[in-house]
Length: 285
Image (cartoon, one colour):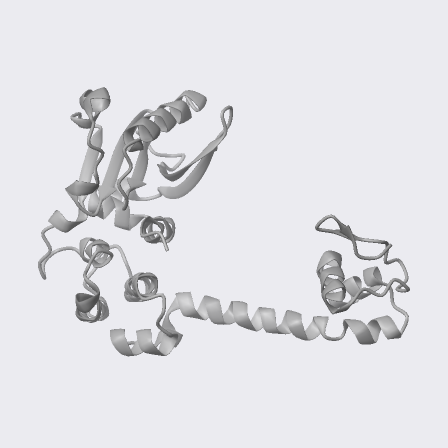
């Protein structure tokens, strides 16, 4: 799994982490939202944009790029997309800032001459996660970001220490449950092969109390209910109901029911069930 995906997920859910990284005070960061924005003609997506709140006195837009792989075209892409987005939205912002986040200096592009004036300006920041100075007095936000690059052998110890700090209320911008949620998210990315129980044992918390796992569990229950409803479809067909009637009764999508029937063997005698073309082949003709 891509390492940079961890950051974009965390920035989406907890924008304050980004502003802690670049030393922006919480009062100035309040109201920002993290988005992936579309730019048309030509069409492309910018993954990391922090949009200011509508009532901000100075509307500064932040462009964040997290790069965990060597990409010699990074600066070409970053600046061309940034300026094209600003061109498409000329009245929305008063200023812009660019932030490039690398795990280490070695992943920066080798050639920088094209953009040297921008790269050396106050509008562009470079952050190297392995050079962050982390102590027990450092903000939890910085410690969380460095956890993403910690060696696997050190993750458990660092994670437990962060959980202990969270439980003492050692953060002005994040609640204890949010901090534990972030720790678990990072651990899940770094140890994708571990079960929930193994992550729980490693970190020393009950995952049932973490919003991330409560949401997953709720989604699982919803999927279980849907599956149970789909199991009743053959019986309802035998009783003479059409696919559309079944969908209305069960409050399910018609196409979902049709796909289930196709997987089980299509019955062309079903009322209101027209021939369906699936992957270019007539399944019922």
